[in-house]
Image (cartoon, rainbow, N blue to C red):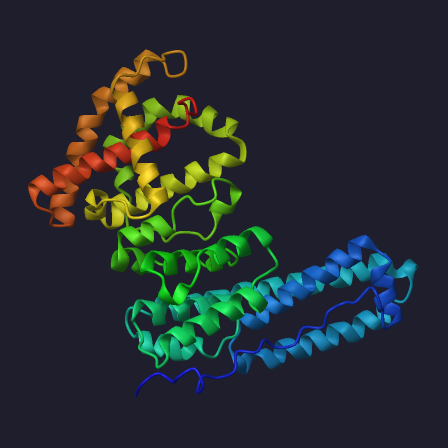
Length: 385
């Protein structure tokens, strides 16, 4: 049975969320809230959480959320009657926000389980995602349609419709994020890497992680899309899946870390918010080396990845001729140099045995993993160009 065309798809209109209009407060409770800066923020938080919870809940589960919101508003109208009730009113809003946050978190876990089922049955996942009207579900549909995992009539029109809804009505009003997503251009005609970056940006507004199948299926484009992008705290999201085991947990790599960490950890703290970009790249390097090591030998695809590869090459070259022993003591540097061959050899062995890489390929991938490990950390204590 073919997936429905755009015209046949269920309407993706979000469930209504009552907005507080302080220009024209309509009740005593509205006037009380509008008179308090803290309560206005609390009301905005509740509205945002309500919108997110409804968007991350399938159609048949939204009615109970709406009924609870109606009950909250009724109680609010009885509590928030004048300025003297502001403390009680604030407590009421805080409780409602906590309830919605818990519901939204649970809803996102269920939505994430739908996305996790994509590799097994993409059509069933797409049908389930059609029951949602939030940004995350729509972004997963964009991925399914544009990647070809699910065939849909008028694919370009379907993708453009979903992207437009996400940008215009579903995402929180984050001007920086919306600008970056708009700069991606026409997602319907874009390469897979752009589609994955679009998905990454949407998931960054949720509690959902990027599942491992994206990386095992798409390799290099996925690692680039979910790598360090912002160079600041925004890189903390979305979370990345955890590999079954980490290459860098091998005792040989722990020995290398023991000689690098004393210099790296203070430098990481001194980097301020920029450290989040470094930490993100650490995570991606670890995931790539542990999940799909053969991709370490692939050429970078995006302009940003090419620049990162060039910088990594310069950093590895600096490591080989390191002489700034005030920043990194000579004894620790020499110990790192001595410990590296054993770590690379252990990694090559793992790649041959677990990933069935040919000996020469395993050796090359293990060396590339070592370069990622060293360059990512050494870049913290090297002077900026």
